[in-house]
Image (cartoon, rainbow, N blue to C red):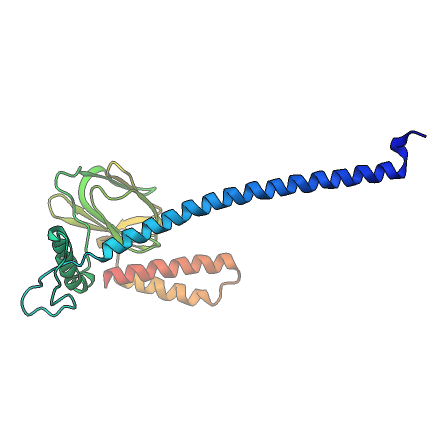
Length: 250
């Protein structure tokens, strides 16, 4: 029988294999420990450098003299061992900004047309009529599902869905025209062109308040007798449209 098939030989081979594996594992652990120590030393150097920078920054105490009779925790100021000319200006600007911040938060700002801005080309149409076609206008106020807003030249591009309400168009000569729209979409492009497509649109002066109130009462009475979801949806649309007309005419 060959010697390599004996049990004693196999046991010797297993022992040698285990010793080789142990040697390789020990070498691997030694190498990883060296790498870890090098990385740790570099990290410690970075931490020490950051601590030195913070310490040097903390040693510099800025000096700033506030206006007379102005209560502030920075007064009286302490002298600084470094040049503080620019720092004084920054601290003064921050103090004035903090004093003005409450007043600024109470002011509602509106968009204004920038000087030299391109003219706004406005197109407004419904399936039955075209009200504006590439006409230069000053501003357009529209009602959308996310809220009413005004559009001026150089407005940020957007696409919105209209809700029942009044569209107000301000011409360049200062006049304005109001239209009632049932629904539709409004598109504002980067070149200051605006397209408003309405499913139904009519000049506001062509609507009658008494008729709108009568239609509203009729729609409200029909809501209780609606038998299915489709009927209730149609009645709800009629109610919302007539409510918007009444609100616009009153």
